[in-house]
Image (tube, rainbow, N blue to C red; front, side):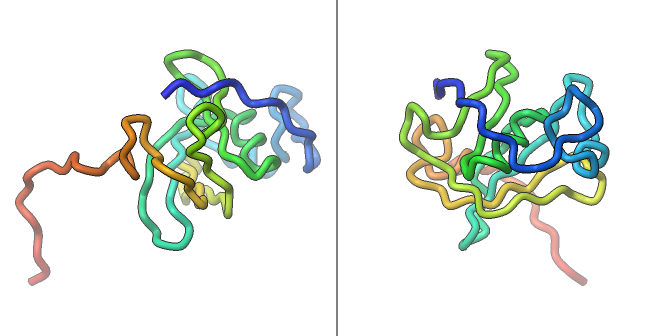
Length: 138
């Protein structure tokens, strides 16, 4: 899906002491970024708990997401920011943001409008199941 770059929002929180990060210090210091400075962002429908997609965020994308009410990702292939829905109309309205216990993954709960996947399916996982042996409790 080709999304356009999102505009920069007005900062709503005190920035960190690191001039490179627009995030509050407590958030910036808790993030465990990969070698490219990115954190995985799992996107989930807020009222059904349906897992919609996975995207990538750096500090700026997370800041934009937390301060604009819309989800912004960082495109690893295009090396630019993109706000979900700007070209497709399939908008993600932010309901909450949480960091996992290790600091290396975000859970972004949203109200998804339309398809979350660039292929047009509701989620990026629809129709892509593997055949597996299922486990059972003893």
